[in-house]
Length: 484
Length: 146
Image (cartoon, rainbow over all chains, first blue to last red; front, side, top):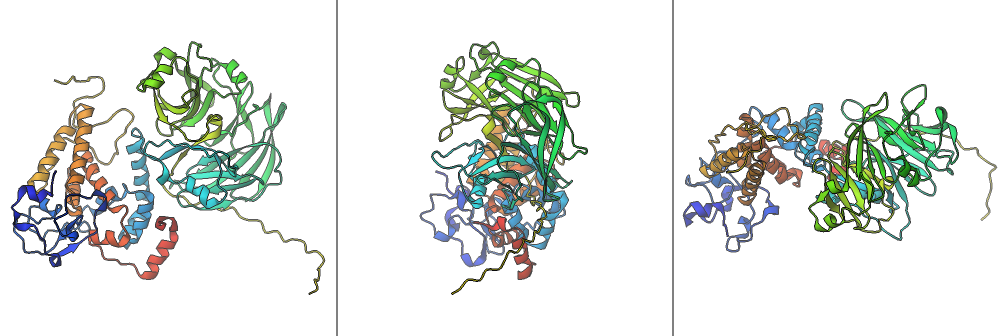
Protein backbone atom coordinates (compact mmCIF):
# COMPACT_ATOMS: atom_id res chain seq x y z
CA UNK A 1 0.00 0.00 0.00
CA UNK A 2 1.45 3.32 -0.94
CA UNK A 3 2.07 5.74 1.85
CA UNK A 4 2.63 9.40 1.57
CA UNK A 5 4.98 10.29 -1.19
CA UNK A 6 7.55 11.59 1.22
CA UNK A 7 7.99 8.26 2.91
CA UNK A 8 9.36 6.71 -0.25
CA UNK A 9 11.97 9.36 -0.72
CA UNK A 10 13.10 10.63 2.59
CA UNK A 11 14.24 9.51 5.96
CA UNK A 12 12.00 9.14 8.92
CA UNK A 13 13.25 12.27 10.62
CA UNK A 14 10.52 14.49 9.28
CA UNK A 15 7.31 12.84 10.24
CA UNK A 16 5.74 15.45 12.41
CA UNK A 17 5.06 18.91 11.18
CA UNK A 18 4.83 21.60 13.84
CA UNK A 19 1.44 23.01 13.12
CA UNK A 20 2.18 26.55 14.21
CA UNK A 21 4.55 27.11 11.38
CA UNK A 22 2.15 26.37 8.63
CA UNK A 23 -0.86 27.87 7.00
CA UNK A 24 -3.39 25.15 6.85
CA UNK A 25 -5.70 25.25 3.90
CA UNK A 26 -8.91 23.38 3.40
CA UNK A 27 -8.78 19.66 3.34
CA UNK A 28 -9.23 17.74 0.18
CA UNK A 29 -11.69 15.37 1.71
CA UNK A 30 -12.74 13.57 -1.34
CA UNK A 31 -9.49 11.73 -1.80
CA UNK A 32 -8.88 10.46 1.66
CA UNK A 33 -6.16 8.07 2.52
CA UNK A 34 -6.92 5.16 4.71
CA UNK A 35 -3.47 4.49 6.04
CA UNK A 36 -3.03 7.42 8.34
CA UNK A 37 -3.97 5.87 11.62
CA UNK A 38 -0.62 6.57 13.26
CA UNK A 39 -0.40 10.18 12.37
CA UNK A 40 -1.98 13.07 14.14
CA UNK A 41 -5.53 13.78 13.02
CA UNK A 42 -4.59 17.21 11.78
CA UNK A 43 -2.18 15.70 9.39
CA UNK A 44 -4.74 13.55 7.67
CA UNK A 45 -6.06 14.97 4.43
CA UNK A 46 -4.50 18.32 5.03
CA UNK A 47 -2.68 20.20 2.41
CA UNK A 48 0.00 22.49 3.70
CA UNK A 49 0.96 25.68 2.05
CA UNK A 50 4.32 26.12 3.64
CA UNK A 51 5.32 29.72 4.11
CA UNK A 52 8.25 30.04 6.49
CA UNK A 53 9.13 26.85 8.25
CA UNK A 54 12.66 25.79 9.23
CA UNK A 55 12.99 22.69 7.09
CA UNK A 56 15.68 21.14 5.08
CA UNK A 57 15.56 21.14 1.33
CA UNK A 58 14.24 17.66 1.27
CA UNK A 59 10.83 19.14 1.58
CA UNK A 60 8.17 18.73 4.20
CA UNK A 61 6.12 15.66 5.01
CA UNK A 62 3.06 17.02 3.32
CA UNK A 63 2.30 15.30 0.10
CA UNK A 64 1.86 18.46 -1.89
CA UNK A 65 4.95 20.42 -1.14
CA UNK A 66 7.29 17.46 -1.21
CA UNK A 67 7.12 17.88 -4.94
CA UNK A 68 8.29 21.42 -4.75
CA UNK A 69 11.78 20.31 -3.90
CA UNK A 70 12.79 23.87 -3.56
CA UNK A 71 13.34 26.60 -1.08
CA UNK A 72 10.29 26.56 1.10
CA UNK A 73 9.47 30.20 0.89
CA UNK A 74 8.15 29.72 -2.60
CA UNK A 75 4.51 30.40 -3.05
CA UNK A 76 3.03 30.61 -6.48
CA UNK A 77 1.03 33.78 -6.61
CA UNK A 78 -1.38 33.36 -9.42
CA UNK A 79 -2.43 36.96 -9.27
CA UNK A 80 0.95 38.41 -9.96
CA UNK A 81 1.80 36.08 -12.75
CA UNK A 82 1.97 37.88 -16.07
CA UNK A 83 -0.65 35.68 -17.66
CA UNK A 84 -2.87 35.33 -14.60
CA UNK A 85 -6.17 36.15 -16.27
CA UNK A 86 -5.55 33.66 -18.99
CA UNK A 87 -4.83 31.00 -16.39
CA UNK A 88 -7.90 31.94 -14.39
CA UNK A 89 -9.95 31.55 -17.55
CA UNK A 90 -8.63 28.03 -17.95
CA UNK A 91 -9.39 27.05 -14.38
CA UNK A 92 -12.73 28.80 -13.89
CA UNK A 93 -14.12 27.60 -17.18
CA UNK A 94 -13.89 24.05 -15.87
CA UNK A 95 -16.19 24.72 -12.95
CA UNK A 96 -19.86 23.82 -12.92
CA UNK A 97 -22.14 26.85 -13.25
CA UNK A 98 -23.21 26.87 -9.64
CA UNK A 99 -19.65 26.91 -8.30
CA UNK A 100 -18.63 29.48 -10.87
CA UNK A 101 -21.32 31.97 -9.89
CA UNK A 102 -20.73 31.39 -6.22
CA UNK A 103 -17.03 32.16 -6.64
CA UNK A 104 -17.87 35.58 -8.03
CA UNK A 105 -17.82 36.51 -4.35
CA UNK A 106 -14.14 35.67 -3.93
CA UNK A 107 -12.96 39.12 -4.87
CA UNK A 108 -13.75 41.95 -7.24
CA UNK A 109 -11.24 40.76 -9.79
CA UNK A 110 -12.93 37.37 -10.01
CA UNK A 111 -16.36 38.97 -10.17
CA UNK A 112 -15.31 41.19 -13.06
CA UNK A 113 -13.62 38.34 -14.85
CA UNK A 114 -16.56 35.96 -14.59
CA UNK A 115 -19.02 38.66 -15.63
CA UNK A 116 -17.06 39.54 -18.73
CA UNK A 117 -18.70 38.70 -22.01
CA UNK A 118 -15.44 37.23 -23.28
CA UNK A 119 -15.43 34.83 -20.35
CA UNK A 120 -18.98 33.56 -20.89
CA UNK A 121 -18.18 33.04 -24.54
CA UNK A 122 -15.02 31.16 -23.61
CA UNK A 123 -16.96 29.06 -21.11
CA UNK A 124 -19.72 28.15 -23.54
CA UNK A 125 -17.43 27.37 -26.44
CA UNK A 126 -15.19 25.24 -24.23
CA UNK A 127 -18.18 23.30 -22.98
CA UNK A 128 -19.37 22.63 -26.46
CA UNK A 129 -16.09 21.85 -28.17
CA UNK A 130 -14.57 19.75 -25.46
CA UNK A 131 -17.63 17.65 -24.89
CA UNK A 132 -19.15 16.99 -28.27
CA UNK A 133 -17.62 13.61 -28.79
CA UNK A 134 -17.28 12.51 -25.20
CA UNK A 135 -20.85 13.50 -24.48
CA UNK A 136 -20.24 14.34 -20.87
CA UNK A 137 -22.34 17.51 -21.00
CA UNK A 138 -25.32 16.72 -18.89
CA UNK A 139 -28.53 15.94 -20.69
CA UNK A 140 -31.57 13.86 -20.14
CA UNK A 141 -34.19 12.28 -22.31
CA UNK A 142 -37.06 13.57 -20.28
CA UNK A 143 -40.43 11.95 -20.01
CA UNK A 144 -42.79 14.81 -20.64
CA UNK A 145 -45.33 14.05 -17.96
CA UNK A 146 -44.49 15.01 -14.42
CA UNK A 147 -46.38 14.03 -11.31
CA UNK A 148 -45.07 16.74 -9.01
CA UNK A 149 -47.54 19.42 -8.12
CA UNK A 150 -45.31 22.26 -6.95
CA UNK A 151 -43.01 24.35 -9.18
CA UNK A 152 -40.12 23.71 -6.78
CA UNK A 153 -40.48 19.99 -7.21
CA UNK A 154 -40.85 20.28 -10.95
CA UNK A 155 -37.63 22.29 -11.07
CA UNK A 156 -35.90 19.62 -9.02
CA UNK A 157 -36.68 17.14 -11.78
CA UNK A 158 -34.57 19.19 -14.15
CA UNK A 159 -31.54 19.38 -11.90
CA UNK A 160 -28.34 18.31 -13.52
CA UNK A 161 -27.01 16.88 -10.26
CA UNK A 162 -29.57 14.13 -10.38
CA UNK A 163 -28.49 12.88 -13.78
CA UNK A 164 -26.42 9.77 -13.71
CA UNK A 165 -23.09 9.62 -15.41
CA UNK A 166 -24.25 8.05 -18.64
CA UNK A 167 -26.46 11.01 -19.30
CA UNK A 168 -29.51 8.96 -19.99
CA UNK A 169 -32.12 8.50 -17.36
CA UNK A 170 -35.78 7.84 -17.55
CA UNK A 171 -38.24 7.13 -14.84
CA UNK A 172 -41.92 7.35 -14.51
CA UNK A 173 -44.02 7.03 -11.44
CA UNK A 174 -47.06 4.92 -11.80
CA UNK A 175 -50.36 5.42 -10.13
CA UNK A 176 -49.82 9.11 -9.65
CA UNK A 177 -51.78 11.87 -11.27
CA UNK A 178 -50.02 13.85 -13.93
CA UNK A 179 -49.80 17.47 -12.94
CA UNK A 180 -47.34 19.02 -15.39
CA UNK A 181 -46.31 18.44 -18.94
CA UNK A 182 -43.07 19.60 -20.54
CA UNK A 183 -43.95 21.14 -23.89
CA UNK A 184 -40.71 22.46 -25.25
CA UNK A 185 -37.16 23.53 -24.55
CA UNK A 186 -35.48 26.52 -26.14
CA UNK A 187 -32.16 28.19 -25.36
CA UNK A 188 -32.07 26.86 -21.83
CA UNK A 189 -35.67 27.71 -21.01
CA UNK A 190 -38.40 25.15 -20.51
CA UNK A 191 -42.05 25.66 -21.43
CA UNK A 192 -44.36 23.51 -19.41
CA UNK A 193 -48.00 23.56 -18.52
CA UNK A 194 -49.95 22.58 -15.48
CA UNK A 195 -53.01 20.54 -16.21
CA UNK A 196 -56.49 21.15 -14.90
CA UNK A 197 -56.81 24.08 -15.45
CA UNK A 198 -54.39 24.65 -18.28
CA UNK A 199 -51.79 27.22 -17.32
CA UNK A 200 -48.44 27.77 -19.05
CA UNK A 201 -45.14 28.42 -17.34
CA UNK A 202 -41.66 29.20 -18.54
CA UNK A 203 -38.80 28.28 -16.28
CA UNK A 204 -35.02 28.15 -16.14
CA UNK A 205 -33.76 24.93 -14.59
CA UNK A 206 -30.43 26.46 -13.51
CA UNK A 207 -31.54 29.72 -11.92
CA UNK A 208 -34.89 28.19 -10.92
CA UNK A 209 -36.74 31.22 -12.13
CA UNK A 210 -40.42 30.41 -12.77
CA UNK A 211 -42.71 32.66 -14.80
CA UNK A 212 -46.39 31.92 -15.21
CA UNK A 213 -47.96 33.17 -18.39
CA UNK A 214 -51.28 34.94 -18.60
CA UNK A 215 -54.17 32.63 -19.27
CA UNK A 216 -55.67 32.34 -22.67
CA UNK A 217 -59.39 32.49 -23.18
CA UNK A 218 -59.54 29.08 -24.79
CA UNK A 219 -58.88 26.12 -22.60
CA UNK A 220 -60.99 23.29 -23.85
CA UNK A 221 -59.70 22.16 -27.17
CA UNK A 222 -56.79 19.93 -27.99
CA UNK A 223 -53.66 21.85 -28.72
CA UNK A 224 -50.14 21.20 -29.77
CA UNK A 225 -47.86 23.92 -28.43
CA UNK A 226 -44.59 25.12 -29.82
CA UNK A 227 -41.97 27.21 -28.04
CA UNK A 228 -39.52 29.51 -29.80
CA UNK A 229 -37.13 31.94 -28.17
CA UNK A 230 -34.67 34.47 -29.43
CA UNK A 231 -31.23 35.21 -28.05
CA UNK A 232 -28.87 38.10 -28.43
CA UNK A 233 -25.17 37.74 -29.11
CA UNK A 234 -24.46 36.91 -25.48
CA UNK A 235 -26.83 33.97 -25.57
CA UNK A 236 -29.23 35.81 -23.29
CA UNK A 237 -32.86 35.19 -24.13
CA UNK A 238 -34.49 38.43 -25.18
CA UNK A 239 -37.99 37.11 -25.79
CA UNK A 240 -40.06 34.02 -26.54
CA UNK A 241 -43.32 33.01 -28.13
CA UNK A 242 -45.68 30.14 -27.48
CA UNK A 243 -47.74 29.01 -30.45
CA UNK A 244 -50.82 26.90 -29.86
CA UNK A 245 -52.23 25.05 -32.80
CA UNK A 246 -55.72 23.69 -32.58
CA UNK A 247 -55.56 20.04 -33.58
CA UNK A 248 -58.78 19.74 -35.54
CA UNK A 249 -60.05 16.30 -36.35
CA UNK A 250 -61.34 17.20 -39.79
CA UNK A 251 -59.52 18.55 -42.81
CA UNK A 252 -58.92 22.27 -42.83
CA UNK A 253 -57.67 25.03 -45.13
CA UNK A 254 -56.44 27.13 -42.24
CA UNK A 255 -54.11 26.88 -39.31
CA UNK A 256 -55.94 28.03 -36.23
CA UNK A 257 -53.22 29.51 -34.06
CA UNK A 258 -53.03 31.36 -30.84
CA UNK A 259 -49.74 33.10 -30.18
CA UNK A 260 -48.36 34.39 -26.90
CA UNK A 261 -45.45 36.79 -26.95
CA UNK A 262 -43.31 37.60 -23.95
CA UNK A 263 -43.05 41.11 -25.29
CA UNK A 264 -46.77 41.83 -25.15
CA UNK A 265 -47.85 39.37 -22.48
CA UNK A 266 -50.96 38.60 -24.51
CA UNK A 267 -52.46 35.81 -26.57
CA UNK A 268 -53.49 36.74 -30.10
CA UNK A 269 -55.53 34.56 -32.44
CA UNK A 270 -54.50 34.01 -36.05
CA UNK A 271 -56.02 32.15 -38.96
CA UNK A 272 -53.27 31.33 -41.40
CA UNK A 273 -54.30 29.97 -44.78
CA UNK A 274 -52.67 26.77 -45.97
CA UNK A 275 -51.63 26.02 -49.54
CA UNK A 276 -53.39 22.64 -49.29
CA UNK A 277 -56.06 21.13 -47.15
CA UNK A 278 -54.43 19.46 -44.21
CA UNK A 279 -55.35 16.95 -41.57
CA UNK A 280 -53.53 16.25 -38.35
CA UNK A 281 -52.57 12.79 -37.12
CA UNK A 282 -54.85 11.31 -34.49
CA UNK A 283 -52.21 11.14 -31.80
CA UNK A 284 -50.71 14.53 -32.31
CA UNK A 285 -47.49 15.55 -30.76
CA UNK A 286 -45.90 18.93 -30.25
CA UNK A 287 -44.19 20.59 -33.19
CA UNK A 288 -40.47 20.36 -33.74
CA UNK A 289 -38.45 23.53 -33.86
CA UNK A 290 -35.83 23.97 -36.55
CA UNK A 291 -34.05 27.27 -37.15
CA UNK A 292 -36.69 29.03 -35.09
CA UNK A 293 -39.50 27.67 -37.26
CA UNK A 294 -42.16 25.37 -35.85
CA UNK A 295 -43.14 22.26 -37.80
CA UNK A 296 -46.30 20.25 -37.08
CA UNK A 297 -46.83 16.89 -38.74
CA UNK A 298 -49.76 16.67 -41.08
CA UNK A 299 -51.19 13.67 -42.88
CA UNK A 300 -50.15 13.06 -46.49
CA UNK A 301 -48.08 16.17 -46.91
CA UNK A 302 -45.45 15.83 -44.27
CA UNK A 303 -45.12 18.96 -42.18
CA UNK A 304 -46.58 22.42 -42.01
CA UNK A 305 -43.99 25.03 -41.10
CA UNK A 306 -44.71 28.31 -39.36
CA UNK A 307 -42.32 31.06 -38.28
CA UNK A 308 -43.85 33.05 -35.43
CA UNK A 309 -41.38 35.88 -35.91
CA UNK A 310 -42.09 36.38 -39.57
CA UNK A 311 -44.64 38.90 -40.73
CA UNK A 312 -47.04 38.68 -42.41
CA UNK A 313 -47.98 35.37 -40.83
CA UNK A 314 -47.78 32.53 -43.30
CA UNK A 315 -47.14 28.83 -43.41
CA UNK A 316 -45.49 26.43 -45.78
CA UNK A 317 -45.85 22.74 -46.43
CA UNK A 318 -42.73 20.60 -46.44
CA UNK A 319 -42.81 17.11 -47.78
CA UNK A 320 -41.14 14.28 -45.97
CA UNK A 321 -38.82 12.08 -48.07
CA UNK A 322 -40.74 10.37 -50.81
CA UNK A 323 -38.89 7.07 -50.45
CA UNK A 324 -39.81 6.56 -46.84
CA UNK A 325 -42.33 3.97 -45.73
CA UNK A 326 -45.52 6.00 -46.02
CA UNK A 327 -47.75 3.00 -45.41
CA UNK A 328 -46.36 2.24 -41.96
CA UNK A 329 -46.52 5.91 -41.13
CA UNK A 330 -50.23 5.93 -41.79
CA UNK A 331 -50.90 2.60 -40.11
CA UNK A 332 -48.99 3.44 -36.95
CA UNK A 333 -49.73 7.15 -36.92
CA UNK A 334 -46.06 8.04 -37.24
CA UNK A 335 -44.94 6.01 -34.24
CA UNK A 336 -41.95 4.53 -36.05
CA UNK A 337 -40.80 7.78 -37.57
CA UNK A 338 -38.59 10.18 -35.63
CA UNK A 339 -38.13 13.60 -37.17
CA UNK A 340 -36.32 16.30 -35.26
CA UNK A 341 -33.75 19.05 -35.35
CA UNK A 342 -30.34 17.81 -34.30
CA UNK A 343 -27.25 20.04 -34.08
CA UNK A 344 -28.46 22.31 -36.83
CA UNK A 345 -29.73 19.53 -39.07
CA UNK A 346 -33.28 18.45 -39.78
CA UNK A 347 -33.19 14.68 -39.66
CA UNK A 348 -35.64 11.85 -40.17
CA UNK A 349 -35.06 8.36 -38.82
CA UNK A 350 -37.48 5.61 -39.66
CA UNK A 351 -37.74 2.11 -38.25
CA UNK A 352 -39.53 -0.70 -40.04
CA UNK A 353 -42.19 -2.05 -37.66
CA UNK A 354 -42.09 -5.48 -39.19
CA UNK A 355 -39.00 -7.57 -38.48
CA UNK A 356 -39.26 -9.18 -41.86
CA UNK A 357 -38.90 -5.88 -43.75
CA UNK A 358 -35.77 -5.71 -45.83
CA UNK A 359 -34.47 -2.50 -44.34
CA UNK A 360 -34.64 -1.95 -40.61
CA UNK A 361 -33.36 1.58 -40.11
CA UNK A 362 -33.38 4.40 -42.66
CA UNK A 363 -32.22 7.95 -42.23
CA UNK A 364 -32.51 11.19 -44.19
CA UNK A 365 -31.08 14.64 -43.62
CA UNK A 366 -32.61 17.81 -45.03
CA UNK A 367 -30.13 19.09 -47.58
CA UNK A 368 -31.92 22.15 -48.88
CA UNK A 369 -34.42 23.58 -46.47
CA UNK A 370 -35.76 26.25 -48.81
CA UNK A 371 -36.49 23.72 -51.48
CA UNK A 372 -37.49 21.05 -48.99
CA UNK A 373 -35.04 18.54 -50.41
CA UNK A 374 -33.94 15.52 -48.43
CA UNK A 375 -30.93 13.32 -48.89
CA UNK A 376 -30.93 9.67 -47.97
CA UNK A 377 -28.05 9.00 -45.57
CA UNK A 378 -28.39 5.26 -45.18
CA UNK A 379 -30.63 2.23 -45.05
CA UNK A 380 -29.48 -0.75 -43.02
CA UNK A 381 -30.79 -4.26 -42.73
CA UNK A 382 -31.02 -6.24 -39.53
CA UNK A 383 -28.06 -8.37 -40.48
CA UNK A 384 -25.95 -5.21 -40.67
CA UNK A 385 -26.56 -4.60 -36.98
CA UNK A 386 -24.43 -5.82 -34.12
CA UNK A 387 -24.33 -5.46 -30.38
CA UNK A 388 -21.83 -6.03 -27.59
CA UNK A 389 -24.64 -7.06 -25.29
CA UNK A 390 -25.30 -10.79 -25.72
CA UNK A 391 -29.00 -10.65 -24.91
CA UNK A 392 -29.57 -7.77 -27.28
CA UNK A 393 -27.49 -9.52 -29.93
CA UNK A 394 -29.76 -12.53 -29.74
CA UNK A 395 -32.80 -10.35 -30.36
CA UNK A 396 -31.47 -8.29 -33.25
CA UNK A 397 -33.27 -10.18 -35.98
CA UNK A 398 -36.67 -10.09 -34.37
CA UNK A 399 -36.93 -7.28 -31.79
CA UNK A 400 -39.29 -4.34 -32.14
CA UNK A 401 -37.54 -0.99 -31.96
CA UNK A 402 -39.28 2.36 -31.49
CA UNK A 403 -37.27 5.52 -32.16
CA UNK A 404 -37.16 7.91 -29.23
CA UNK A 405 -34.74 10.75 -29.71
CA UNK A 406 -31.51 11.85 -31.29
CA UNK A 407 -28.54 12.45 -29.05
CA UNK A 408 -28.47 16.21 -28.36
CA UNK A 409 -24.75 16.58 -29.16
CA UNK A 410 -23.70 13.51 -31.02
CA UNK A 411 -24.83 13.20 -34.61
CA UNK A 412 -23.83 9.54 -34.58
CA UNK A 413 -26.23 8.37 -31.87
CA UNK A 414 -29.96 7.66 -31.97
CA UNK A 415 -31.87 6.41 -28.97
CA UNK A 416 -34.55 3.78 -29.42
CA UNK A 417 -36.69 1.65 -27.22
CA UNK A 418 -36.43 -2.10 -27.50
CA UNK A 419 -39.91 -3.33 -26.74
CA UNK A 420 -39.18 -6.96 -25.92
CA UNK A 421 -36.23 -6.21 -23.63
CA UNK A 422 -37.98 -3.17 -22.07
CA UNK A 423 -34.90 -1.03 -22.26
CA UNK A 424 -33.45 1.96 -24.06
CA UNK A 425 -30.79 1.30 -26.63
CA UNK A 426 -28.42 3.57 -28.45
CA UNK A 427 -27.73 3.06 -32.11
CA UNK A 428 -24.37 4.18 -33.44
CA UNK A 429 -24.65 5.24 -37.04
CA UNK A 430 -20.95 4.83 -37.74
CA UNK A 431 -20.45 1.27 -36.62
CA UNK A 432 -24.09 0.16 -36.74
CA UNK A 433 -23.91 -1.04 -33.21
CA UNK A 434 -26.76 -1.18 -30.76
CA UNK A 435 -26.02 -0.95 -27.06
CA UNK A 436 -28.19 -0.93 -24.00
CA UNK A 437 -28.30 2.66 -22.80
CA UNK A 438 -30.48 2.33 -19.75
CA UNK A 439 -33.21 0.31 -18.22
CA UNK A 440 -35.94 2.74 -17.24
CA UNK A 441 -37.87 2.36 -14.07
CA UNK A 442 -41.60 2.34 -14.14
CA UNK A 443 -43.91 1.31 -16.93
CA UNK A 444 -42.74 2.24 -20.37
CA UNK A 445 -45.41 0.81 -22.63
CA UNK A 446 -46.32 4.18 -24.06
CA UNK A 447 -42.74 5.28 -24.48
CA UNK A 448 -42.26 6.80 -27.91
CA UNK A 449 -40.80 9.96 -29.38
CA UNK A 450 -44.08 11.71 -28.68
CA UNK A 451 -43.77 11.55 -24.91
CA UNK A 452 -40.09 12.40 -24.49
CA UNK A 453 -38.03 15.51 -25.03
CA UNK A 454 -34.24 15.82 -24.88
CA UNK A 455 -33.33 18.22 -22.13
CA UNK A 456 -29.95 19.88 -22.15
CA UNK A 457 -28.82 21.80 -19.14
CA UNK A 458 -27.94 25.21 -20.52
CA UNK A 459 -24.33 26.18 -20.63
CA UNK A 460 -25.01 29.65 -19.26
CA UNK A 461 -27.81 30.83 -17.00
CA UNK A 462 -30.17 33.16 -18.75
CA UNK A 463 -32.90 35.17 -17.10
CA UNK A 464 -36.46 34.41 -18.14
CA UNK A 465 -38.00 37.49 -19.78
CA UNK A 466 -41.04 38.41 -17.77
CA UNK A 467 -44.02 39.40 -19.92
CA UNK A 468 -45.83 42.58 -19.02
CA UNK A 469 -48.98 41.97 -17.06
CA UNK A 470 -52.12 43.73 -18.10
CA UNK A 471 -53.71 45.31 -15.07
CA UNK A 472 -57.44 44.85 -15.18
CA UNK A 473 -59.51 46.81 -12.77
CA UNK A 474 -62.43 44.64 -11.73
CA UNK A 475 -65.91 45.99 -11.78
CA UNK A 476 -67.05 46.72 -8.31
CA UNK A 477 -70.44 45.30 -7.55
CA UNK A 478 -72.92 46.49 -4.97
CA UNK A 479 -71.51 46.64 -1.49
CA UNK A 480 -72.81 44.10 0.91
CA UNK A 481 -72.88 44.71 4.54
CA UNK A 482 -72.61 41.76 6.84
CA UNK A 483 -73.97 42.01 10.29
CA UNK A 484 -72.16 40.77 13.28
CA UNK B 1 4.69 -3.97 -32.63
CA UNK B 2 1.36 -2.25 -32.65
CA UNK B 3 -0.26 -1.77 -35.99
CA UNK B 4 -0.39 1.76 -37.19
CA UNK B 5 -3.87 2.69 -38.22
CA UNK B 6 -3.13 4.81 -41.20
CA UNK B 7 -6.64 5.84 -42.00
CA UNK B 8 -7.36 7.71 -38.76
CA UNK B 9 -4.22 8.93 -37.15
CA UNK B 10 -1.37 10.71 -38.79
CA UNK B 11 1.82 10.52 -36.74
CA UNK B 12 1.84 14.08 -35.65
CA UNK B 13 2.52 16.55 -32.93
CA UNK B 14 0.23 14.87 -30.47
CA UNK B 15 -2.98 16.30 -31.83
CA UNK B 16 -5.41 13.79 -30.46
CA UNK B 17 -8.35 14.67 -32.60
CA UNK B 18 -11.04 12.40 -33.85
CA UNK B 19 -13.12 13.88 -36.66
CA UNK B 20 -15.96 14.93 -34.45
CA UNK B 21 -13.90 16.59 -31.75
CA UNK B 22 -12.68 20.08 -32.65
CA UNK B 23 -9.92 21.52 -30.52
CA UNK B 24 -10.25 24.77 -28.60
CA UNK B 25 -8.59 27.22 -30.86
CA UNK B 26 -6.60 29.14 -28.32
CA UNK B 27 -4.03 26.45 -27.53
CA UNK B 28 -2.54 23.67 -29.57
CA UNK B 29 -1.07 20.50 -28.20
CA UNK B 30 2.52 19.92 -29.00
CA UNK B 31 4.83 17.11 -28.22
CA UNK B 32 7.36 19.44 -26.72
CA UNK B 33 8.71 18.65 -23.31
CA UNK B 34 7.58 21.02 -20.61
CA UNK B 35 10.34 21.75 -18.13
CA UNK B 36 8.97 22.63 -14.75
CA UNK B 37 11.91 23.96 -12.79
CA UNK B 38 10.00 24.73 -9.65
CA UNK B 39 8.75 21.27 -8.90
CA UNK B 40 10.58 18.20 -7.74
CA UNK B 41 12.08 15.59 -10.07
CA UNK B 42 9.39 13.01 -9.43
CA UNK B 43 6.63 15.14 -10.87
CA UNK B 44 8.80 16.19 -13.77
CA UNK B 45 9.32 12.55 -14.64
CA UNK B 46 5.60 11.88 -14.59
CA UNK B 47 4.87 14.91 -16.73
CA UNK B 48 7.55 13.97 -19.25
CA UNK B 49 6.15 10.48 -19.51
CA UNK B 50 2.68 11.83 -20.06
CA UNK B 51 3.83 14.11 -22.84
CA UNK B 52 5.66 11.27 -24.51
CA UNK B 53 2.73 8.90 -24.41
CA UNK B 54 0.25 11.61 -25.33
CA UNK B 55 2.09 12.07 -28.59
CA UNK B 56 1.41 8.50 -29.60
CA UNK B 57 -0.70 7.79 -32.63
CA UNK B 58 -2.50 5.05 -30.78
CA UNK B 59 -5.59 6.36 -29.10
CA UNK B 60 -5.50 3.71 -26.41
CA UNK B 61 -1.99 4.72 -25.40
CA UNK B 62 -3.06 8.34 -25.19
CA UNK B 63 -6.12 7.51 -23.15
CA UNK B 64 -4.04 5.39 -20.80
CA UNK B 65 -1.52 8.22 -20.47
CA UNK B 66 -4.25 10.67 -19.53
CA UNK B 67 -5.74 8.28 -17.02
CA UNK B 68 -2.35 7.54 -15.51
CA UNK B 69 -1.65 11.22 -15.09
CA UNK B 70 -5.02 11.84 -13.49
CA UNK B 71 -4.60 8.91 -11.16
CA UNK B 72 -1.14 10.09 -10.17
CA UNK B 73 -2.33 13.60 -9.40
CA UNK B 74 -5.19 12.31 -7.30
CA UNK B 75 -3.25 9.61 -5.52
CA UNK B 76 -0.39 11.86 -4.51
CA UNK B 77 -2.80 14.62 -3.47
CA UNK B 78 -0.69 17.21 -5.13
CA UNK B 79 -1.32 20.58 -3.62
CA UNK B 80 -2.84 23.48 -5.45
CA UNK B 81 0.38 25.44 -5.32
CA UNK B 82 2.19 22.77 -7.28
CA UNK B 83 -0.74 22.26 -9.60
CA UNK B 84 -0.73 25.95 -10.43
CA UNK B 85 2.96 25.85 -11.22
CA UNK B 86 2.42 23.10 -13.73
CA UNK B 87 -0.62 24.93 -15.13
CA UNK B 88 1.52 27.99 -15.66
CA UNK B 89 4.20 26.12 -17.57
CA UNK B 90 1.73 24.01 -19.54
CA UNK B 91 0.06 27.22 -20.64
CA UNK B 92 3.38 28.81 -21.54
CA UNK B 93 4.46 25.84 -23.61
CA UNK B 94 1.00 25.53 -25.11
CA UNK B 95 0.45 21.95 -24.10
CA UNK B 96 -3.34 21.74 -24.07
CA UNK B 97 -3.66 18.22 -22.74
CA UNK B 98 -1.28 18.82 -19.86
CA UNK B 99 -3.05 22.07 -19.08
CA UNK B 100 -6.38 20.31 -19.22
CA UNK B 101 -5.40 17.58 -16.77
CA UNK B 102 -4.03 20.01 -14.20
CA UNK B 103 -6.69 22.71 -14.57
CA UNK B 104 -9.35 20.09 -14.23
CA UNK B 105 -7.80 18.98 -10.97
CA UNK B 106 -7.61 22.53 -9.64
CA UNK B 107 -11.24 23.12 -10.60
CA UNK B 108 -12.20 19.86 -8.95
CA UNK B 109 -10.50 20.89 -5.74
CA UNK B 110 -12.21 24.25 -5.53
CA UNK B 111 -15.65 23.55 -6.96
CA UNK B 112 -17.26 22.56 -3.69
CA UNK B 113 -15.33 24.95 -1.52
CA UNK B 114 -16.85 27.87 0.23
CA UNK B 115 -15.81 31.29 -0.93
CA UNK B 116 -13.68 31.74 2.18
CA UNK B 117 -11.81 28.53 1.47
CA UNK B 118 -11.04 29.52 -2.10
CA UNK B 119 -9.67 32.86 -0.93
CA UNK B 120 -7.32 31.04 1.43
CA UNK B 121 -6.12 28.69 -1.25
CA UNK B 122 -5.24 31.45 -3.67
CA UNK B 123 -4.12 33.85 -0.99
CA UNK B 124 -6.73 36.39 -1.98
CA UNK B 125 -7.85 39.19 0.27
CA UNK B 126 -11.55 39.90 0.25
CA UNK B 127 -12.07 43.38 -1.17
CA UNK B 128 -15.86 43.40 -0.96
CA UNK B 129 -17.69 45.25 1.73
CA UNK B 130 -20.24 43.07 3.52
CA UNK B 131 -23.01 44.96 1.72
CA UNK B 132 -21.45 44.38 -1.66
CA UNK B 133 -20.99 40.69 -1.00
CA UNK B 134 -24.55 40.41 0.21
CA UNK B 135 -25.85 42.12 -2.90
CA UNK B 136 -23.85 39.74 -5.05
CA UNK B 137 -25.31 36.74 -3.29
CA UNK B 138 -28.80 38.11 -3.84
CA UNK B 139 -28.12 38.44 -7.52
CA UNK B 140 -27.65 34.70 -7.91
CA UNK B 141 -29.39 32.97 -5.02
CA UNK B 142 -29.45 29.67 -6.90
CA UNK B 143 -25.68 29.47 -6.75
CA UNK B 144 -25.72 29.51 -2.96
CA UNK B 145 -28.33 26.85 -2.32
CA UNK B 146 -27.28 23.68 -0.48
